[in-house]
Image (cartoon, rainbow, N blue to C red; front, side, top):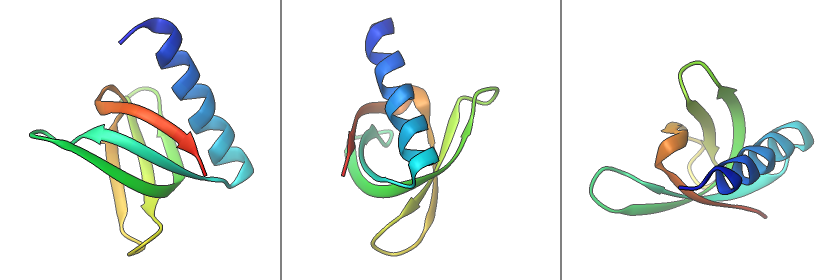
Amino acid sequence: MDEQLLEEMSFTLHRAMSDGFSVEVQYHNGSDFSYLSAKVTAMDVKSNKIGLLDQKNKEKIIVKFDDICNVTVL
């Protein structure tokens, strides 16, 4: 993934977290791609992980930033 795309996704995730927006995240789950509508609850730069709260079932999910392919603000 190129540097510009990483910066854009990081900016979008930070903005969504600070403004309380929901996002749709497309990420690789190890064998396939998953889509998730969620609120960003945490971003840990040191561990390169993002905390999400699934809007459908209120489950907390941790995703590695490197596994994220696309982020859209809802």
